[in-house]
Amino acid sequence: VYLTAREWTVLNCLLCRPRTVVSKAKIEDVLFSLGSEIESNTVEVYVSRIRKKIGADRIATVRGFGYRFVVT
Image 1 (cartoon, rainbow, N blue to C red):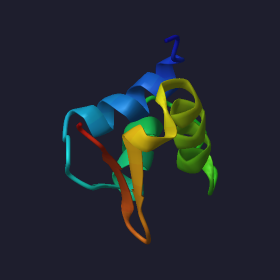
Image 2 (image 1 turned 90 degrees about the vertical axis):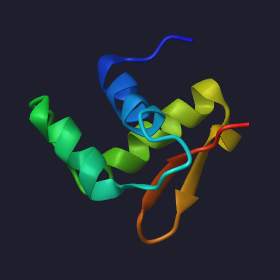
Image 3 (image 1 turned 120 degrees about the horizontal axis):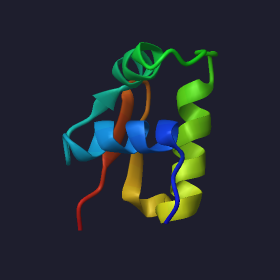
């Protein structure tokens, strides 16, 4: 599966903490440190793209907080 550098950065954030909820703010901080422009929906866009590539069931949304990588 091909992921862009920013998609990999978001996924890696989640993979480093499997089964743990990672806040949207934490993911934004990591993306911002790369010099990326951050819009209000940047994280949602990257998560959506990653879900399309690896399967929607692999990343769970924790409403009002962030995302969690689902280990099966």
